Amino acid sequence: MKNWMITIAMAALSVFAVGAHASDVQLDKAPIDLRDQASLQRGAQTFVNYCLSCHSAQFMRFNRMGEDLGISEEELRANMMFGTDKVGDTMTVAMPDKDSVVWFGSPPPDLSVIARARGADWLYTYMRTFYIDEKKPMGVNNLAFPDVGMPHVLWELQGLQKPVYRTTDDGYEVIESLELVKPGTMTPAEYDQASADLVNFLVYMGEPVQLKRQALGIKVLIFLAIFFVIAYLLKKEYWKDVH
Image (cartoon, rainbow, N blue to C red; front, side, top):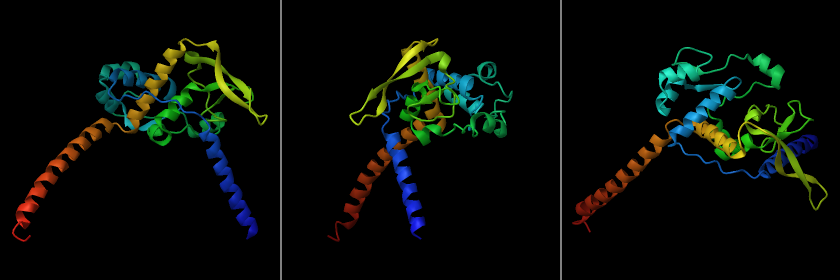
């Protein structure tokens, strides 16, 4: 019995330690604007060019995306639909799970609702904090996701970063910042914007009707406020003789 209790306690402490380690990462604020259609279009293009080869988005259809983001069917077919010719298809990948397990250790997750699971700030930080780590199988690591199993697929755009360490008062070396050692095809500002566009698209994909839901919510609240006044006046009129 005691052994079981010790095992459970150690497991709980390990989970707490992981959570504490994750909370040490300072997340950058993602500049999300679902009304910026140009940003969403750029993010969608980045997604299909760099992410969709491994990660699926099985709850999003090409024609739904095109309709919401103002992308014509011709543009979809020419620039975004590389694995199918049917605009009504969902955004899936052809890579078999067994191959992805061999290459990456586990199947890459579906990204349909990743923004709702992880949060926009985490994704924005994650996309911008890959750094060189020769000890890892992919040659890179990540500040937001330590021991990440994914390669830095956008390294040609961002370039390569190395960690800059500092020694704490306790004598531990921690990463203080990341330094660009090999520039990419984009400037740091351009890459930040590309990351923001991609995360913006992922947020849209996690809840395509978010703007409509918010607009409807405001209308409902206004209706309830007006109805409350009417109901209150009706109540006073109905009960005036009783009181």
